[in-house]
Image 1 (cartoon, rainbow, N blue to C red):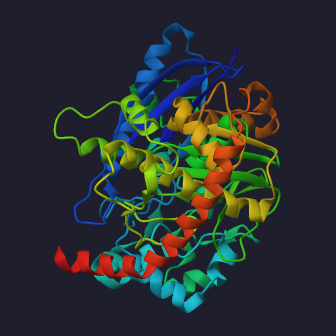
Image 2: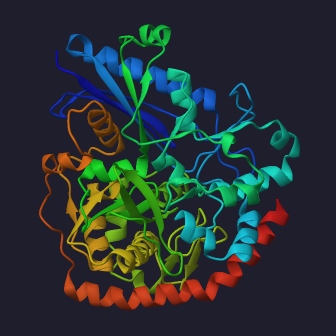
Image 3: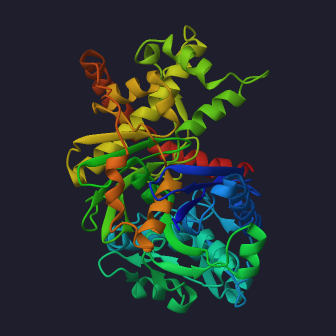
Length: 500
């Protein structure tokens, strides 16, 4: 009997499940949204029990939709990076999970940076930033001593979900490499860093390859989900790394460029590599393959913020792009530093804030709209440049994410970055990558890169040279403006904190 592969993608805003056949054609899919909790400014959390329940519900729905077409399954998992869940000795949460965008440990990150400089970055591939676990754990130890004393395990959300489904406590190298606690050269927990943080290695799950089988679903749970008790579970990896598999950017020289709610670019490498100034990150993918990349906090979430400013019904995405397109390149002299959610690559500055420069009485709404799109692209171009400094110029740039739905935005990104973009015909995403990990685990293919030929590319979207020359000047002005405002960002965040 043929076997099928389920990819479960646990994202910040929701869970998506897709069941694929052995030919990796979708058979059924289901999704459900997740709520993000913000109990205090800068705190971003999720309820782990809600995540577990939602994953179970969506798996059950996808299985029901497959109906009589459902065959024996192996499940692979993908999950957002950098989540931290603190549990007691019974593996019960001692609070909500902290997400990647949680900024409560900013001061601790600053202290770690002053103390270690780039040392931790070059050891772990993770810059010193509140997204990563060293600063989160430092904050917990200092600010919540009672929770710290009760803590027995530190897990990602995916670790917790898989434990509930199988009874096995483990984590994968991909997830571990995005915590900031894994030594890249040895692929083991960094014992020196753990000692600095005051935690034992036994507080962290055992490490596994993303293509390893964890075990089978708990029999009672499998029946409740409408699945066979013989359903296997593969541990999988992180959403960012598995997204590269989903768009076919799995060989050296292929760059995946994503602009969705946030933005990221990633290139595979046979060895871990870092940037001299710490501008990029380096995470494990699978099968002795690493990813060098960058990620920004501000992408499509900027458009969602802009939409919320309308007093009446918010305009559709298409209306915003039409509005922005009615202003010329350069937005008639407006420059938007789009840091409404702080920033990661390439500056790794959680204190960065949104700044609109150059406004005059003659400017109109369409100019502000275009400046917003341009600001996102200018920052993404800076991010791409630092990755290229480490990995060299890519021969293919595979565009993915919500911005691929807009010819206007795609062309702008090509003009600003100077890179020809190609949209994948089947942007499968992280759920596809998770299913591929399951396929490798069961021996149906030898390597995750074997699927690259199934993902075709559209024609290149090339930069317009005249517009490109103009944007090269604007890029220089953008980066100078950031440097000029950097000191003010710290003053503003301190003032905002004292005003709350």
